Image (cartoon, rainbow, N blue to C red; front, side, top):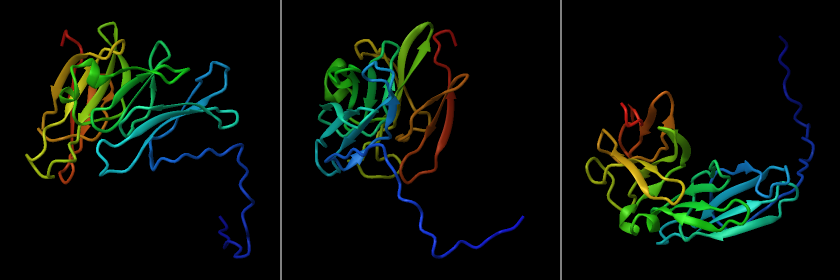
Length: 220
């Protein structure tokens, strides 16, 4: 194999973009490609927000037209959104972020169908971060699986922050179906992953990580 030195005078060709979209927000989640309008073209949905220490940290969810980058809709959800949007079986979207923000949005309009705090009695029900939720089927019923934790307003260190929780929600209207405290007793900042059984990583700040496995079925 011949290895050639790069030409120091070589200049890469100018990048050609079909479109570029920009917004006023400082942070953003990973965009996800979804057909928002139903025209067969994949559009982009992204969450965003403003940096801390603004409390509550404002946030938005925005859908961009995949053809030209135009804004299809932009929804102010009132909390920084850093999770990745996921599509439910009926087509609506679910996305989460800081300060108990987990929202179901109508795909075509961006209207908030429910938020997890309101659906479960108020801010004290879910005060911390929600990470990327995923729709799953448990005992024949659609559920939302996610992690809830990471109280970054409390001092870091072993035993100083509340333990994280693995949460199942009813995606229809948002109420809690089941909850389990993570087994190592630390906070968590990572989303659970569904395998043959539920697997989830526990990643507290300033502490080693743990990997755990648990069944979701009522029968086991």
